[in-house]
Amino acid sequence: MEENDRDEESDTTVTMSTFSQHNFNDDSETLCISIIENMREDYGLYVWPCAVILAEYVWQQKHRFTGANVVELGAGTCLPGLVAAKVGANVTLTDDSSRLEVLDNMRRVCDLNKLECNVLGLTWGVWDSSIFDLQPTIILGADVLYDSNAFDDLFATVTFLLRNSPGSTFITSYHNRSGHHLIEFLMKKWGLKCLKLLDGFSILPSFKASQISGNIQLAEIALMSKDNA
Image 1 (cartoon, rainbow, N blue to C red):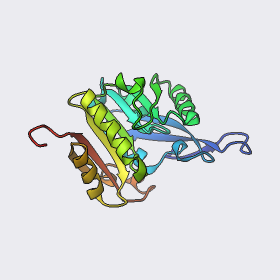
Image 2: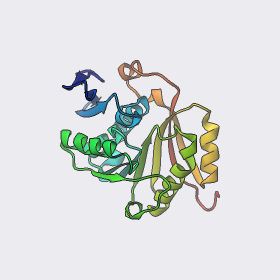
Image 3: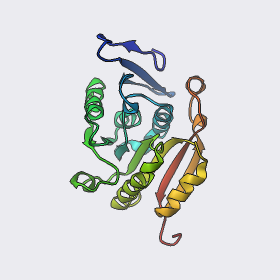
């Protein structure tokens, strides 16, 4: 089935749930992830272009994810985290703890794809017991830079997780709405550095790139060393 080929579920008067299938291929294997989306709910239950790009990057970098401890922030439909789990990562999927319908949908999607991921309510900038146990090798975040009011809470959470697991990396894909200088400002403020910056469309196979639009970038971010601080 082609990318984003969706079939409506029954009872559309109550919901507009759809199933989308997302395929990943290389010379040796093919992977298919099924996602449940709800078009009448908020943005947390839709697969946005940034998630497609980040998921493709995870697939292409799968050697880094095998056996890794991965946390996806603001996971929503959690396509990147599911790809990471499929290639052998130990994955914790998180979203705002108040968004119970999103967290419930995460569990349904894990069951649908026969994956055992930890699903956790995690609100950025809130320091409850759940965050202290997380020690990710890699942190994922697709389109988490959409609300400027939440930027500091997001970067506070990312910085805490990076410090809690030395040598870890934050990989994020985002719409470049106001230029990379905003990301640079936030990184400097929180003692972080950019390891890699890519045009998101350079990651995608041509048939996927033709289906989405926007100015999307992907960045790998880490703690700044004390020598460079």
